[in-house]
Every structure is written in structure tokens, then in C-alpha cells.
Amino acid sequence: MADQIPGAEKKMLAGILGILLGGFGVHRFVLGDTTGGIIRIAITLFTCGAGSIIGLIEGIIYLTKSDEDFVETYINQKKGWF
Image 1 (cartoon, rainbow, N blue to C red):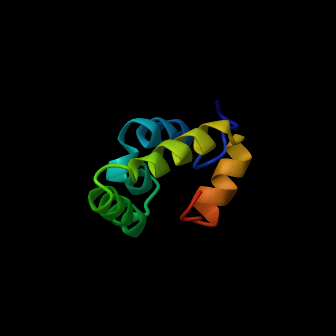
Image 2: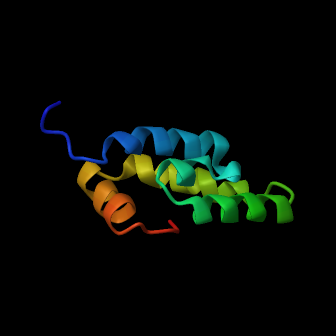
């Protein structure tokens, strides 16, 4: 595990939290995106829970990306949506 890419350890946690608690934006808080997390909470509240599908989709996307792609996209570039 010595050659693991810095930031890749967040991939599994963020993916699982996105799937399970995506409506609460927990996965975005794990990635250091407080604004994105708050926006996810607001969307979920305004759509009476239907907005949580965004977190589910994001969680699946996180888990299907390679470690390199995940780190480059969500850690380095700090991409906010999908």
C-alpha cells in the first residue's frame, strides 16, 4: 500500500456515503466541499427527499472511477457535480 495515490483513500468512503447518505451531502463534506454538502442538503429538503438521487449517482460514479481519475477529478480539480 506504500504506492497508493494520496487522496485515493477517500474514494471508498465518499462512494459509500454518497450511496447511503447522499441526500445529506455527507460525501461532499468528506471531500472537503462544505458548500457542495450544504447545497445537497438544501436540494433534498426542497424536493422532499427526491434530490437524494444526486448523491446516489455521485456515489456510484466515485466507486467506478479509477483511483487516479478520482483523485484528479474530485481532489485536485475539486469538481462539484457528477
